[in-house]
Image 1 (cartoon, rainbow, N blue to C red):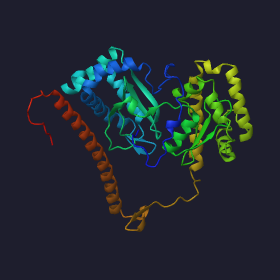
Image 2: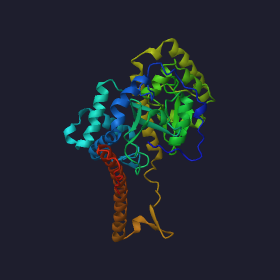
Image 3: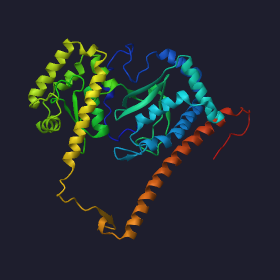
Image 4: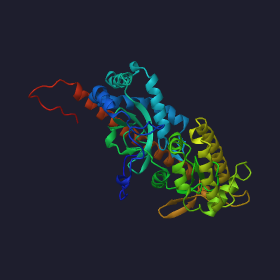
Length: 399
């Protein structure tokens, strides 16, 4: 979750047409305000007067949750908490907001929580949303009335404030319109190579993309509620558009076949044949009205998860050297000299471990300093708002 735009990136979203009418029903987690006028009125009445307190309350919730979330998953995809855990944090915050006792929060912080609850009782929207943030990132955030609220703003750059609140219309946060759009953001954000799914034809109408990450790991994408609803709402036409592209590389097709050949799934024998079969499946499943079958998405999500687990196991096995194959000796480079770690003395190894520990603690302290600065700014703003206006008085200065 990051709000920075990569320098030099081309912002071509101005040319993107809005994918659906702003009056059509919302898809699951779609970042869009459905009843803008009503939500704007509720936001102005309940939330805008207490934005510093609202930010402080969300930050307090993060401080309550962070120790347990870090304990549950200290590392994700090789990165320490909170990096890469935007969804986990957002879901935990949303759950905690429903049950947290206002009495456990400082009085000024509780003001923000009470306002948020009053806003929701009056009919204000509080929705978890996912989409394209500024053409660079996939974002999990909240649409709260006409506000964009990110409670995990530190999950890409840990020194950033944990909470960010912006007018939703200024956040540049838009729905994914089709699979070409998804692929564009995924390449920028994840650095994956992405190909049409010409190897698992029966799943292609729902999951028309195959990803290969920088380490060579293959995954079937994207079995999420929003992406499934996006293509199903258009009778698989978005899937058909990407599947109509040139056949996927034979080497990728063969790797998927090798990973799944004994697992019972129907696999295309060649990319060319897989392309034909995938497009045929779009027509067949449309004719069978599978896009209107409410039970189908859960089956697809389950099947895609099983496939990706099998692909992960195959990748791990293929990446593990045979027992009799020598692995490179790990080395340490200091002052342009390399040392074999296994050949270091016990004292040198102990010093190295101490350095690694200190580096980890420094990273944690940097995150805490950034978070405390954010909290201090919120409290200062709340104090200024609470002070009476004194005509002709000196300007309040807090350094």
